[in-house]
Length: 118
Image (cartoon, rainbow, N blue to C red; front, side, top):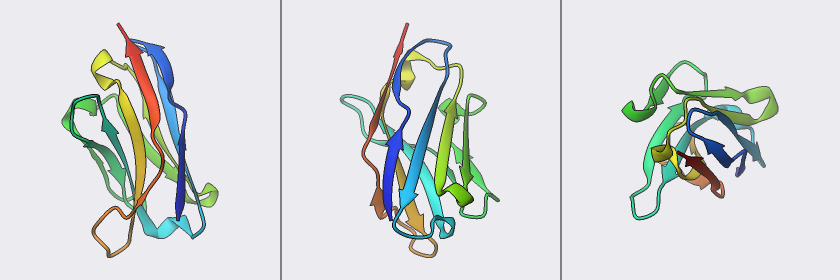
């Protein structure tokens, strides 16, 4: 499966952005989708993920209550709605997919830059 992330940009603190992750090549609905981010000088961290069936979602503590992950399997697209953005959310955001049963994220999209100004 090929992934294409988009939707990043420059926003003021307190603002919102919605990232999209469009999948192509294979049926998307059997993959867990995750969003990750990497800030300059920092390790990549997991931000959120959602199972293929939309049953379970995960959020890292720093984004709980502000970010919402969702997916539309009919459109082969996953989303990350980011509200109340903070300067510390500035990073390159990546989407990734994990095929059911594999246990690792084997498919990655290119990053999209999110910059939050104070």
